[in-house]
Image (tube, one colour):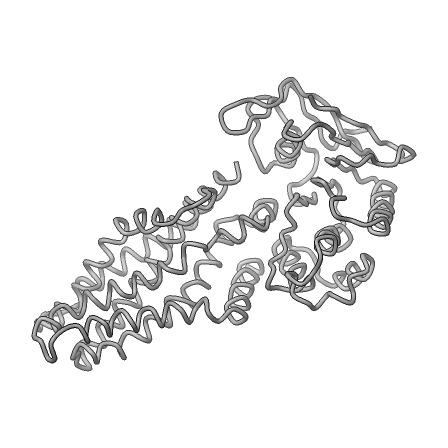
Length: 196
Length: 221
C-alpha cells in the first residue's frame, strides 16, 4: 500500500520552544490517524504541519497528493457571521476551485436545510460546526485534516459524520484527525498516535 | 481569476450588509473637514492654503479607521487558513480583498472630497486636481494600510500601532497628493506630482499583495 502521507524525524515548535520531537508515521489509503494527547501538547500544531499550513522545526513531511486534494477544517469554522451557511460554502467552493452544485445537498445531509439561509451568527455552535463539516460532502478530497471535528456536535451529527468518514475510507481516502472523543474502535484502519 | 472575483464579491456583499462600515468613514471625513472650516474665521486666507492638506489628511485618517480590521475577521474565524490551503496564490486573494476595500472605502471618500472642497473655497479646476490626486493616492494608501494590517493581524491588541506603522509609509503619498493640489493652486502644472503618485501606486500594486501574503503566512505560523 502506498503511503499518502509520511513523516520522519519531525519536530514541532510553537513560538520559541519545541513541543514535540522525533515523530514518525505514515498514513495510507483507507487509513485514519487519530492524534490524541492532553491539551497544549501540540496536536493542532502537528496537524497544521502535516497539512502544510505551518513549517516544521525539523524533519520531513512527504505528501503523495496535490495540495488542493485535501480538506483542512480547523477548530475555527471559517464561517463569516454575517453570511449564511450557503453563502459561506459557495465562497469556499470558489476559493478552492470546487463546483458549487453540491452545497444544498451537503447542508441537507447535515440537517441544516432550515437554517441554510440564515446568517451564521444566528446559528448554534453545533450548527456552525455542522456547516463547516458540510465541506467534506461538498467536494471529494483524498485526504482529510480535521481538528476537533466533533466539538459541539450532537449524537445525530456525530453519526452522520462517521458515515461520511466511512464512505470516504471505502473510496480509498485517508484522514488525520485530532479529537478528545474516542472514535469507534470498529472503524477499519483506525490508528491512534498518542502525544506526550 | 474566479477566486479573485469571489473574494471581491464577498467583500462587497459584506459591505452592503453592514452599511456602518463604509458610511462611518464618510461621516468622519465630513465632520473633520467641516470642523476645520468652522473653526477658522470666515474667509480666512490660510484656510484656502491649508485646504489641500486638510482634505488629504482627513481622507487618510478616515480610510485608516476602517482598515485596521481588514484581515482580523478572516484571521479570527479561520478563513485565512482556507486561503492558504486553496490552490490559488494568496497574493491574488489579498489583491481581491484590497481592491474591494478601495471600492468600499476609498472611492466614496474620493467622491466626497469635492463637496468638502467647497468649504475651503476650492474652484472647479482645483477640485478636479484634488479628485485626481485622491483617485491615485487613496488606492496606494489602502494597499499600504492593508500590508500593515496583515503585519499586525496576529497581535492581540493593535490600537494605535497600525497608524504608527502606516503614517510614515504614506508620507510620500500625502506630499505628492497635497502637492499636486497646491501646484494647481499656484498656477503651476500639477502633472509631475500626479505622475509620482501614479508611480507609487504602480509600485504598491506590484509589491503589496506579495508582501501582505507573506505577512499573513507569518501570522499563521
